[in-house]
Image (cartoon, rainbow, N blue to C red; front, side):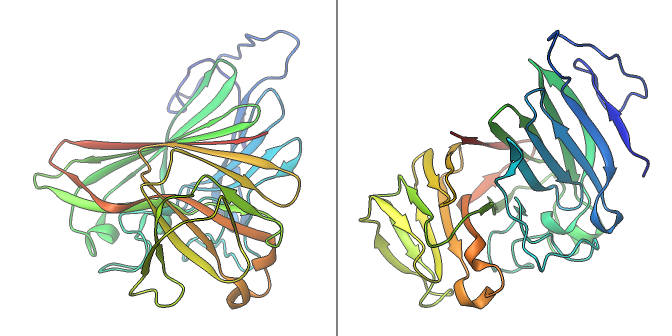
Amino acid sequence: MAALSMTWSCSPLTSSKFRRVNRYPGMAFASVKSTEGLGNLPKVVLTSPHGSEAELYLFGACLTSWKVDSKDLLFVRPDAVFNGQKPISGGIPHCFPQFGPGPIQQHGFGRNMNWSLVSSENVEGNPIVTVELKDGPYSRAMWDYSFHALYKITLDKKTLSTEFTVTNTDNKPFSFTTALHTYFRASVTGASVSGLKGCKTLNKVPDPTNPVEGKEERDVVTFPGFVDCVYLNAPNELQLDNGLGDKISIKNTNWSDAVLWNPHLTMEQSYKDFVCVENAKIGKVQLEPEQSWTAVQHLTVA
């Protein structure tokens, strides 16, 4: 795929012509560039006029980078593969239409399929990209429903926002679970998450198939070893201290639950360099034909 760099004002990518409009004289343009990433996989690079940057691979609609002041706040594992055959391990992968294990493949098929670029916009100087996923033979072989998923990414100076919408385009109802499996770059010994005190917990460390129910009593949750815990009815804002000098606000709308994960010694080569703080929908979302469900996430670095 040839590299394509453009700046525009509210113009969709489906058009072959763009008007260069700078609404902010003296400030750099916001831009979106479609190019080739690792393994020759198509990716989209968003750059804000403030210099922040995000990278989105169309395979799995996986955000693999979010840089503010040249510092990448996301983490891609060193064992990640970019061959279009396996999910990209790191960044912000999708879990859809199944979070975790279940009747279909682990974490669903959304992270294993090629999403399509729908549109790009420049709103108030911020680059926005929307991609979509629809059912096909691969998905229907394991989940026999017609659906339409939209994923909109907005990049601001210090905020990366995502909006995920699922619409039932079938003539019968369906249900799903989902999550954004976000890998944050971190020093695991110094990382901590605030805002979870009082939540009901499902601790999957003793037995992933039979989580232990409990209640979070800590004001600040750390990662002293292997961590795999679901927090039900979590608040709509958490605070991550990544142990590297960054404080990140994780706000959401309609992601009702949260998940903390670090594999510890089961992933010895990289566990010290990241923590996962995931917005999730653990309980099933039930959609009737033509109904939609939307969830929003805002990641902001202080």
